[in-house]
Length: 392
Image 1 (cartoon, rainbow, N blue to C red):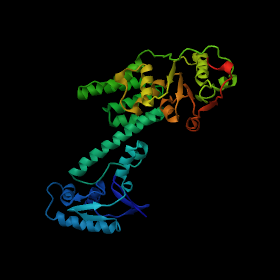
Image 2: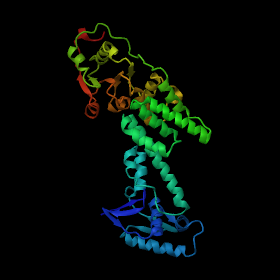
Image 3: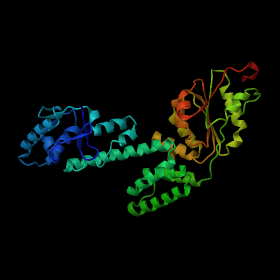
Image 4: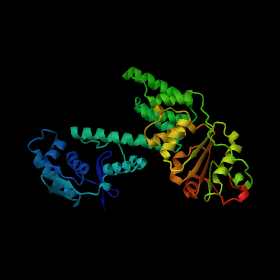
C-alpha cells in the first residue's frame, strides 16, 4: 500500500489508515524539507540551514546522515537518494498533500484543495524557514478559500454562506475582499440593511486602524444597494405577423430555464421574442437580451453587470467574482433574460442568475443537454415552421 504524506496540518505519514512512525520532530523536519522539494535535489547545506538554522551546530551534519538513514528504514524503501551533494526524495507529487493542493488550485478545483487542509501547515515544526513557509502556504490557503467562495456565490449559495463568512470576517476584519463576499451573500439573502451595516463597521475600522477608506469595489457595491434600482429594458422590437406555435408558446412558461432548440430557420429567436414581449409585464425588474454569437461568457457577464447599473470601477477583475456580482445583482429581482444563439452549455452556465425568481430563455441550434440534466431546463424543440409562420 502506498504512502501518503500530510503537511497541511500536523505533519504525518500514513499507509492507508495506519500512521507511520517517522521519529522525533527534527527527523520529521528533514522529511518535510525533502517533501516540499520532492523529486528535486536539496543540497546538504540547504537541508542543514532549513532544519537547524543558518548557524547549525557542528554535530548537525552527522545527525542529518543518521536521520536520513532512519527515514529510509521507517518508509520501507521509499527512495531518498544521495545525489550531487544533496538528497532527493523520489515520490509521486499527488501523494504529498501540499503538492496536491497546489495542483488542484491550478485546475480551479478550490473546494477539493481546501478539503486537504487539516490545520496550520507544518504545525509543530520549528525554525525560521518553516515559519516563513507556513506563512506562504497559509496565504495560498486563504486565496483558495476566497476563490472558492466566489465560485459558491456565483452558484447562488448566498444564504448558506452568510454564517460561514460572518465567522471569517470576525477573524480577518480588515480584509476587504472577504467583506465584499459577506456583503454579497447578505444581499443575495435579502438582507441589504445588514450588508450596509457591515460596510459601515468596516469603514470605521479601516479609518481608525489604518487611516484608509474602503476601496472602489466596496464603494460601488454599496452604491448598487443605495441607488434607485436600475430596471433595464433590452428586448429588441417584437416580431410582427407572428401566428401559430401555440403549444410551443405554452411550453415556454414551464420552469425558470427554458431552451428553444432547432435548425436554422426554425424561428427560435422569433418565438422567444414574441413570448418575451407578451410576458414582459410579469418581469417588472427588467428584461435583458444578449446575442451570444461568437461571444466569450466573461465579456457577456461584464456587459450585463454594466446593464444592471454597476460602473467600471465596481466590476472585480476575477471571472468568478464577476459572475458572483452578476448573480448578487439579480438575487432579489424578477427579471427575464433571453440568451440568443448559444453555442453550447458552457457558454450559458455563467449567465444563469442563480435564482428561480428570474426566467431564462435560451435559443440554440444545439440541444444543450447539459442545461437540461444539470440545471433543470425545460426543452422546447422546434421544427421549421410552415412558410406562412416564418419570419419574412
